[in-house]
Length: 272
View (cartoon, rainbow, N blue to C red):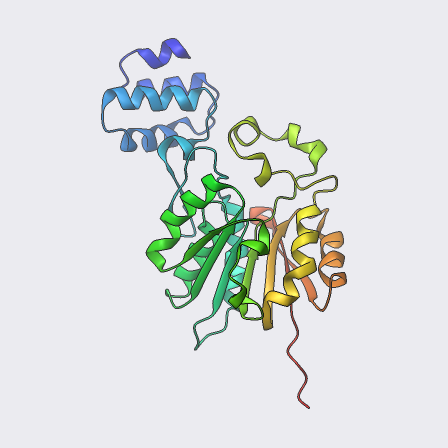
């Protein structure tokens, strides 16, 4: 592959180099690389990085998510297209006629919060948070144009205390890969994304437990926590969400995207 990357890289040469590296969608990827490269030298470097196994999104510097072009920096978790289903579910729940408070926890690039606020027409107060400094820097590039703020820290500890009891939509794209299965992930994720964004502990649900245990204190009455999980983990995830205090949980699935989302809502007070 290294030899392929050093020859003149016209479009057929890029496709050939990517095919030789095992890229299944070589033609589509070649089109993106050719559009992104400003010089032949830059193109050769980008093709070499992709052929070496770097995620395409890290190589070109962006990912398409929810109709947006989201900046993706080296080492930051790449937003998955299946997670658009979570954003769609959140958009259906967000209160209309007001300026809802949206929090994107474990935000990575901030793609989920940015896509949701865009779907709401920009009429939302957006906060995002992540423990990874590289993710925080990246998220600021995606969230700031929407008037959002990004906070660095561990889960809720990163958020301003003034948000307690005010959050209408809490997006928590927590890591849910069991520790023993991280080694089975595709090399693109395992080698080039932060481990903290992938490893969910022994059963994959450790970070979820921490989020669910405190979510009720941050949600507004009628507000919802939404998180992605696997189909096999969903029953346990629902029990965790409901057993951690005051939330009513259900699942939503999208077979076409292999997506499973748990929606846990803080009930509104009953009229006296």
